[in-house]
Length: 252
Image (cartoon, rainbow, N blue to C red):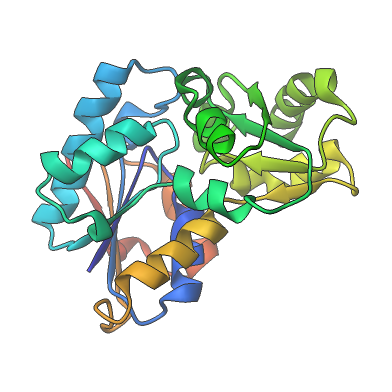
């Protein structure tokens, strides 16, 4: 069984991509809505929450894990192999697959993410390792605005404010927070038709397929766990996967 961990409903975009690559895999998803958003938390707080979240998934039967939350640094993700007694091929994080996807691309890159992700430098350092530069753009509070259902007008204004200083400076915009692809159409509208808006879930799902198949051949079941009741989460599950509320469990 594959376990997917995120700070809320953003990781549903990763689940959707994984479903396309591994339709027969059994998946359990945990969204830590009670502690969302993760983007403003310290490294120490992120460490505790991430280990707790992934441990919950292991306890529910997950043998392969995807840490979907970009605010969790690459160094923390690597330490999780030891902290959770995993083999390296049992864990997929977001940074490595994304950097690899653009390794040979002849494009000017920009990256939108939470302040925690930008501060950590994980993507900037990853791209430097393959000889590329990336423009880091932090968007404070956007993940929370998406998670808790702020209006499209408010969300668009936050994106416009963040992108305005970087107009015409990039050809591809990487959405390095799992919540951001939920409003990818707004990013595209603000960035313009000539810009490629990229969802890292595509690269992550491809990596998961390579590492987890054929071990992860099951009945194609999907279960959801959340740490706080959220009708917004349940509605996104219904609209994205056509699954009813009975598939979602709330844990305290």
